[in-house]
Image 1 (cartoon, rainbow, N blue to C red):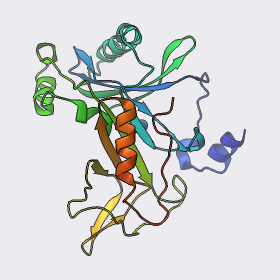
Image 2 (cartoon, protein in one colour):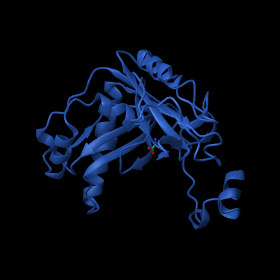
Image 3 (tube, rainbow, N blue to C red):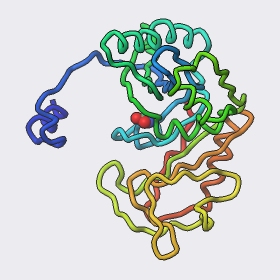
Image 4 (spheres, rainbow, N blue to C red):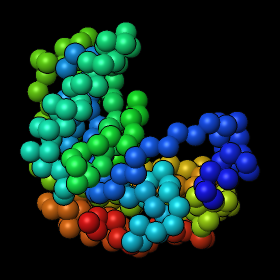
Length: 257
Ligand code: GLY
């Protein structure tokens, strides 16, 4: 009732809140599967798990994503087979039937409910921060896959993945996903915006007067690989320790199941 009042009466989302759709409540572990598709063939990428709530323990409001790991510990080969047959292939078939063939990266936001995997959302793009933990594991050149997608030859390409693991922790502005300040100096990055032993993805930064500054809610995605998920998580968190901006907030439990 509170949510509907804010959306429909207080109009927190403007006119787009004039109509609401009430759907089945889904609970269970979340899985993000991104897939390459040329409209005929669909090839799922390695799995990942996003953490959408702002605070540790999955408390607080939803965000665009506070951190990810890949692979997703809940997503095994049996579940993948089920999803390919019952979700991924039927999706592209249905889009073709509706004369809306889709080529590119299709994002399946799945919930592993007690009644099996269900789709909670689709996106027609790479996910953020899923991509930060998926692409570092890709061994085949991305450009070859994109060309095969455009030319509808995905069935003739073998996509190879590294057997390692990857973790990404988002450093967010204080107050995000509510109001937050911008323009705060970020320290601990070199002149290329990087730091030792990690890859720093810039989500909401600007480069002003020879320094990196905050310029968004989700500011940096600190990403590291490892032989195991535990090692990747350790490497990501130890890379964060020297990076600082006022009000910086990040979850300490990325990767916890
Ligand atoms: N991480 C969720 C999204 O990209 O929509």
